[in-house]
Length: 375
Image: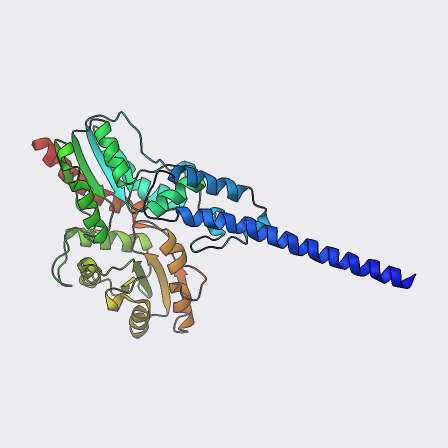
């Protein structure tokens, strides 16, 4: 009798274990399927299947259990791709309308998948440009297809890439096209934008590209201009950091020759008497803007309190993760790990939501619009 009981117990345990293993395998298989679908749309090139792939990825994600969602892991995929709460997407506007008339201002941004930042930083600039130019139609284009796909898959919001936006302008019979980049400087993205626009130059009666935020680059770190001065004053005023606290502004960084713009911004801060302001970059280019170098500069200057803030148009992935994230390699974590400071705080706000920055973009746009009107 006892022998039969123990045999039944062993069989039950084995069955339970097998069922558990089988469920774990099914969960992993379902999660891997979603990861593969996310990786398939995490690309910089749009194709004929992009719309279908975005919809399929979201449908498969929604079908997962909460436990299965935590298992999603791929080359680029993770649970945050669909699961992270980045704000209310309904506050944004893709600005991809048709029947817009003969005069268009196309506001071109790298883009962000963070809903709040997209609505406040990018849409904030677009609304300001539209308000200043009521006779023109303002539309949007993003240059990062990876971000376009992310927003489309998660929010079902379809944002045009550059080719789509330019093709739409042609189809709508636009005659005068003004491009306003929201890029910080004349860097690689600005160059790529210019090349894309050049291909369509003969499709319009006039095409003109306005200045990026910081204006002309200049030959070395000593060269500053009115745009850089305006940006410096605007971001320092918005940060509102006391003089005994270091304000570290974190830009993206670039290997492009335009990287001197970051050094020029440091020069501008110094010339304005903002001795507690330090310019850094995620990429560490120029070298003196690397996180380790900035930590040393702040420490040597004697500051014990630090505020980190992005020197970026949008407060997206870089601001939330590279700057303010909890990982060991975030700027916040690295500043804290140095044990040199009593406090390290973060302001996660992009430049695009600052009214004075919006006004600067408007001024750049208006200068080009006025030149088109004269001709």
